[in-house]
Image 1: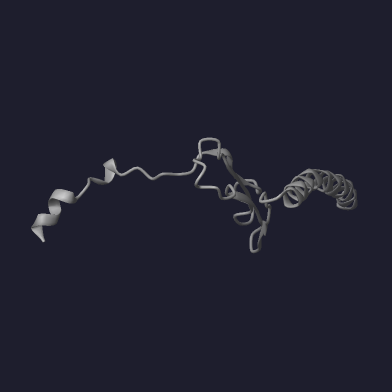
Image 2 (image 1 turned 90 degrees about the vertical axis):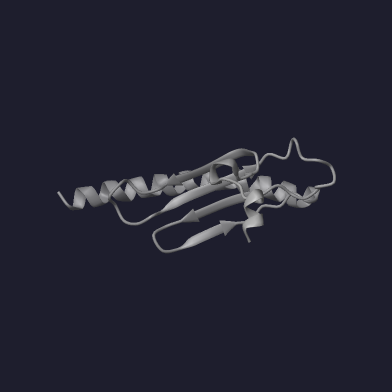
Length: 116
């Protein structure tokens, strides 16, 4: 097996090829020291430099997790209808989250008053 040594590479010479990304974030949702590992993971692959023959959809990830559950929202770009729906879904989510936040803030204020 010693003849294989000539083909061996040092670990520092191996570079992982990650796809180029327009967005690649992992955001924790809890303050340090509170609860578990709640997070939002977003990834939108950048296919600008992709060769024509590799004509597959970009990698798209929107993952939301609390301490025990994880959801993965699906987005598709293969034809006009799924592209339109994916954009609609992404545009609708912030409004729903803002309304949830407003309701939560109102209930937090009431809870604070009750505990005084």
